Length: 93
Image 1 (tube, one colour):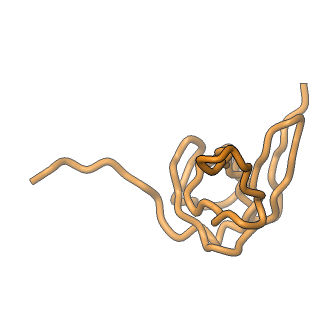
Image 2 (cartoon, rainbow, N blue to C red; image 1 turned 135 degrees about the vertical axis):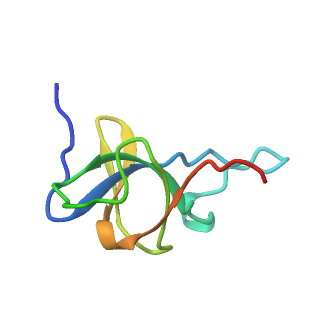
């Protein structure tokens, strides 16, 4: 079995890009769609004192990263410094 393991302060993100179609059934190409900025952390390189971990949902910089397709699944490889925030559950006050 193969897996992607990021190196050099990189984070591997899983982001879903839903297929968008118009009401008339026309598929909107990826180049015309706004890219998502939220994703789930799949793997991290050996980052000391990382503030995120595998499974966290994160917000990343808009034009960051490199999209890759590995074994039929789309991923985004971004520098750790381009992760802007982690989404956390809080209790209502």
